Image (cartoon, rainbow, N blue to C red; front, side):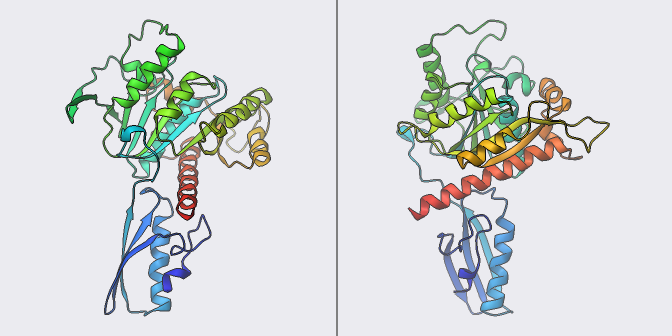
Length: 351
């Protein structure tokens, strides 16, 4: 079969072996089939499609008229109570400690995923320190409701083509949230299960820092595709990364770790764009990733514009007309995240 000669560039296995070719139809020199992607935003989809066309021309007939239908299917994963049937992939963005830029990474990852053409949602699950209202410049927000199957659901707020939900939309921003653990977990679970997301390719969850009750609530409530752990290069931060990995790999949680993100990896002054200064240490996350056999998904520079853009409500990943090293770093993170999800999905198919 001609298509057995076409490999997935990331997995190194043939598309037929991976079960990605379906509904083949031949009518004379007209050939059509479905190329089933693990995610509609697969960054290699155009290359694989062209490779399929080239293989048929080489192994079947150079004059064949080939139609490749790019499609995808919902991820086969457990969904508690089938509460999230329209969400294909859920990505947790976590950190072992606060202050490492986890929310900045989550927000810019969500925007970068949306720029690939995917439908994206973002949950601000940091109950005690919600950041999304600030980073998206959303002030007082009236949350609308909508009926589905006799139940009223909250509708997420739409901005920058991202569907957003945050506890910051539901409480007075001038007052501190003083909740004990069970109260916070209950409020978070209600927000998760009573929001109507519609069709979503990637739901990014900005997790609270640490490894406590709220993290367990999220892990046990949402059907999770994988987790990303954000850290800075310092040893004190990396020690918390190890604890975060252990939490996700706990048999009672069992969530794949898609990879690490090293934030504030290096400083590059605007007047010396070719220079890199490793203020917080060099390649700490990279070395840990090699030791733990976990991918390093991205290295985000320490640049003033990243912080300023978040504070102004216009995250740096939005700058698409004139790409910058910062916006390109987040786009690379998004592409690497998609690749890791594709690999997990393909591995699950073969089991």
